[in-house]
Amino acid sequence: MREADLTRTALATGLNALAKANHMQGGFYNQAFFNISIGLERLLKLIFLIEHGLTHAGAFPSEEELRNRFRHDLKRLFEEAIAIRHRLQDKGQKFQWELVDEDLAARIVNVLAEFARATRYYNLDYLVGARRIGRDPLEAWAQDVASYLVKQYPATRRVRDEKWAAEAEQLLKGHVILLQETETGQPIRTVRESALHGRMGDWIQQKATFHTATVVRYLTEILTVLNYQAGPGAVLELPHLWEYFTVFGNPDSLLKYRKTFLI
Image 1 (cartoon, rainbow, N blue to C red):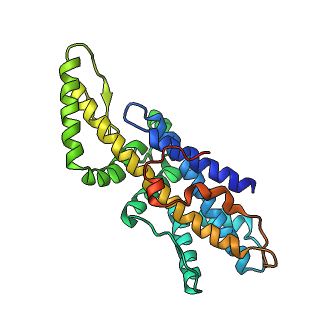
Image 2 (cartoon, rainbow, N blue to C red; image 1 turned 90 degrees about the horizontal axis):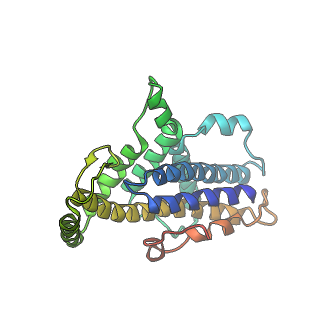
Image 3 (cartoon, helix red, strand yellow; image 1 turned 30 degrees about the horizontal axis):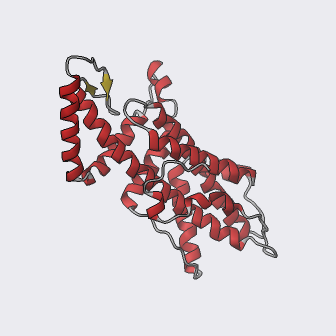
């Protein structure tokens, strides 16, 4: 129960941070990546542990097996969760939730897996000139996730944003000096550029937060199904861990605009 509570809290605070992230407050991106990657790893390992217990006479795997088989590899853990889901479906189990966009879900998991495995210390590695240094996590998110979502940016909103940015530029031009940069490190020097990038970034992060939350929903349903099987009289008896994750088990209409997941 403590592990489930820890996992829920990490995921919820990570999603809260992801919803707030923008090019002027990059710390929210890193907070999101840290908490969501940790939360996903723990959630995925809980799924693996429960399924193992149910199929091995109530016994959990050894520490060595859990540690060496998966380490911090979110991609391998995610693939294992999908395999467990397929095994449950083969036995007749029905699931309510699918991944809303499998391609985007894979991109999100891959960026978080890269962060968990190799780039958590990117800034420090950069400063000390590490030989093996991966992508800047903010740049990786922009390249793999934001660039995918921006293709869906509504034309009507783009027109409104252009008008708003032009008005802001006219009002503030000559009165402010901007020293900003995008998530990929490109300089932003005009009010118009800042306004446009910020408005588009708000839309992208809203969508990205929603899709990340649906990945969590997809996984928590697997845990819930396993948890129901680990009831009274089963080879593995567990408390109702799924109760910690009910905030994620909502339909798209309730997740799309949600900015607070820790309640």
